[in-house]
Length: 125
Image (cartoon, rainbow, N blue to C red):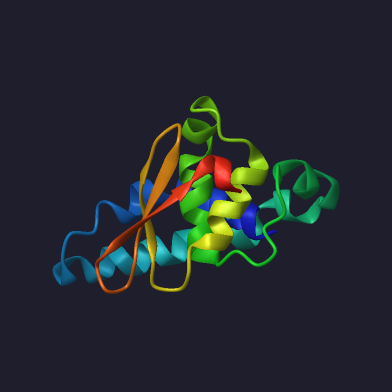
């Protein structure tokens, strides 16, 4: 289910990019209302068989914010040769407060909370 919600958030990114400052607060409220409405009324979440098909790897143990990042780069990663199990291992390697900053066919770069970077090698998973 978290993967399906992550995909919906990514689909609604166009709303988020239009908010530039606190002056856009009323627009931001509309954006959140639209996201909530979209998620509540989406029939996709009612069909468990469809939810199972949406997950190429289990998201158990992966932070939701990391899941959104993985779904966002998934197609590119697969083209680069990453397999679903390697993406899952990458997701599990990213901790709270860290973010994925770079991905190549060999490695991913993770920015740690303190601003330093560490590498996660695809073939190490």
